[in-house]
Image 1: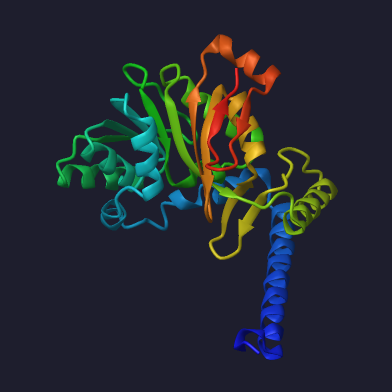
Image 2: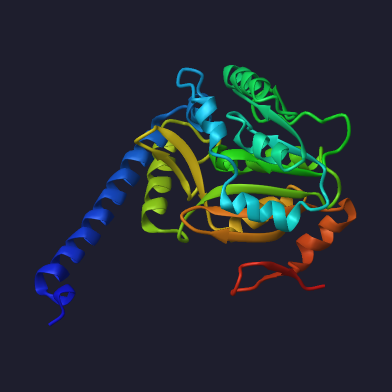
Length: 294
């Protein structure tokens, strides 16, 4: 008998699987109770945690990481015609420096003022041509002219609580970039509507209803990571695709590993109603590229 097929090994694998499930359910219950008890106004403290001024990141170390492989792939495949690139939630300047080194005119906005100031100093020290400016939470101010492309940094889209807020955030990016300009971003994923995600949403909404908190209901996919604590929304692709379309974007490509990343393009205004009616994109199962069918 192969050593990996020994009864003891089989028992170990089964017990590890069960332990992982029990931990996931326990965290789901914990997250559901917390999201049910927290007030809407307090949610902002958790969906902007990565930019918390009381826990500053080491900007120099962050900047040294450079562009990730998936970002390089997206740039190579989709930004060849771009010159100016907007990076939203650009604190840490990692993406700004990487894009600038590749010859792009990179501009960033950041919602944490101290983090923005730290990134400005780092860009100055490195004599980078990139620039970064602070902005009000979730706002995307226009530049002197429309940008040729945009990045949403550090899976920031998943940090925004509430579907309508995420769509408005995406729409605000749509308003400051050129028609057909690419948008590149990462996001947290989930395996369909698993029991843990459904459990925490149901528990949270029950508690919120009992407390009279009916605004901004908890969605399947919402989660508070107890280790941070950090709010993030976990997407399935079909859900994210619809949010992109409602904000005025056409999905181009998406791929997943332990997280997801996607590229969309800014739709031309008269193109949007047709896109929503016809559902004119299909998934190529081999490379997960979305292919236009009309």
